[in-house]
Image (tube, rainbow, N blue to C red):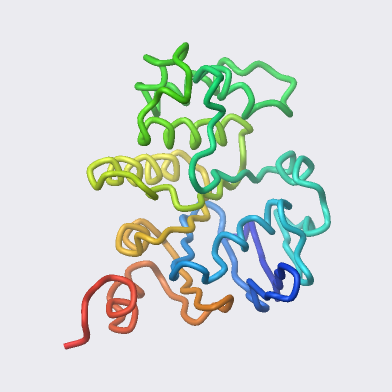
Amino acid sequence: MSNILEVKDLNVAYGGIKAVKGISFEVAEGEIVTLIGANGAGKSSTLRSIVGLVKPASGSVVLKGEEIAKLPPEQIVNRGITLVPEGRRVFADLTVLENLKIGAYLRKDSLEEDLNWCYDLFPRLKERSWQLAGTLSGGEQQMLAIARALMSRPDIIMMDEPSLGLAPIIVQGVFDIIREINRQGKTILLVEQNANMALHAAHHAYVMETGRITMTGTGMELAENEEVKAAYLGKARE
């Protein structure tokens, strides 16, 4: 299976603070790959730098064989990658349908097929298509944020803390949707503090600590790793 995304020796800094320190990882086409780690480990900075919202201090980001590290965000999105941001960030004063159309703002073709696909994935959004996004529940807003990202027809979709602030029963539903999107052909790079859910969903996983990748393996390998259990899954070593 070929790599759709390759990050090599990536460094991200905010002033004198190094948030990401020379990390390298790969995302194979068709996989769910997750970055787990504590708050402040550099996970979100990694996603933001990949999509061009933060310029890396150095390093390489290769998408489908093309270097994208120095491109502006709109060109990166046009090349087939999109980000579902932490905190959802829907446009509260616009309707569900208007939010979805904004996700496709770079497209010139018909949106009908993709709107129908999103409504099939998220029937609740179809029911609320004319409702203002700001009046949706937290779970519904997360659905909308994911669907909005899908409207650009990305080859790879990145999600930053999709379970943040959601009730456990809603979190399970979000991860069910993540698996379904993957089954339908989308590659997913997932940043998630809910390590248990993320590792059991992922084909491959990386552990980040203080800006560095310290461990890698399949999702199940890391879920069964004693150090990972102790640090991130709330299970002490026996």
